[in-house]
Structures are given as structure tokens and as C-alpha cells.
Length: 243
Image 1: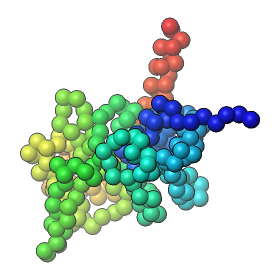
Image 2: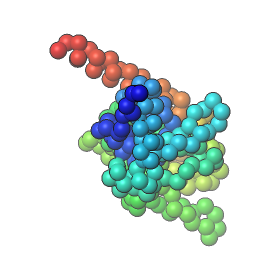
Image 3: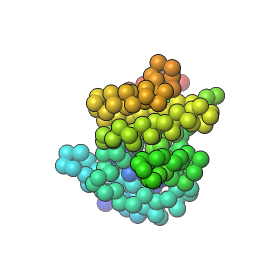
């Protein structure tokens, strides 16, 4: 009988990423960590056996989402609130956030990940969404490039009302004007949402041309993340061969 492997240092590193990011598809997690999908599944099995990670099946053919349990967050020793089991209404958004986090990770960008954002009041702002109605809004992630102001990132997969979208974009305009952030990045689910974001951003003074706004499709973000990871893997293999 073969002996089952337990969680090692690489497995725990992957656990830390999941704890910070929240529920994630195995493919996004593998991309972020630089693992082959089969290796990622092996790490996931070890974490599941230890009770540090749980898995939620999503729609048929779309895989599952992995997320760190309360015990897993304690083991990872990261300052976040453990993610609850994801509800179906949030599956797509959570997967989009995870792929965006993977994109930042493979580009070696520092970030405030989705679960970390929930505890950072510095990235919350009030929005007026109607007569006498004010709500608190936070970006989904924040990306940090050394020597530059951070970029607030919104994952926009479902169409919002124009008024609410303008209110959020107005908040980003104020943050850029005061130096809180250097840019706003939108990761959109399709071309229609992309066009809506660009048009409403222009009404509050945010434009693609001046660098204050960047808009990418989620599929493009996935492609960029996977391409960057493949390039890193090729460079690592070449360096190993030249030793």
C-alpha cells in the first residue's frame, strides 16, 4: 500500500494563497502557484484530508471551488475572516476574483486579496445610491507595483445600473484625485459590460487614454495569466538546463 503524503511547505504556501483570495477554481490556483493541474489536485487532496480546505461543486462541466476552512486559515496564519461556503449566486464572481488574483500573482505583483480587503477600512467608501440611501463599497482587490500608487480592481461580471456604476466610478475618481490610488482596473465579463464601464467612466472623468482607467475582459485576464505562467516555467526549465 502506498503511503499518502501530508501537507508539505508547498502545500501550505498554496493554502495561504487560498486563505487570502477566497474560493478559487483549481485551474486558477494551479496557475498562481506554478503547478501542473494534476499537482494542484494532489495538493488539494492533502489539504482536504487535513480539514484545511473544502471543495464546492459548481455547474456541471465547470469544476469546483476550493476554499480554506476556519482551521485552514488558522494554520495559514493570515489575518483574514474565513470564507463561508460559496453560494451559487457568487460562484462566477468568486472565480473571476481568483483568476484576477492569479494574474497578479504570476506577474509578481503584491496585492491586497479579496479576503484581506474585507478588513481594510482604508479601501472602503460611501456611495449614494438613491434618495437617503448610502452604502459602503470596497474594490475586489488592490494591486501594488513598486514605485507606483496602488491600483484598485473591480471584477464586473454582472450588469449594474448606470447610476450605481457611476457612483462607484466616482469613488475611484476621488481616490485617484487625492492620491489614494493611481488607477482603477475593471475586469469585465463581456464586451457589453466593458462598453458600459467605459461610457459611464467618461461621465465622471475617468478615461482609458489618460491612464486612470484600464478595462480588460475576464477571458483576456485568464489568457494573460496562463501565458505568463508558461513563460516563467520555460525560463525556469532553461535556467535548470544551463546549470
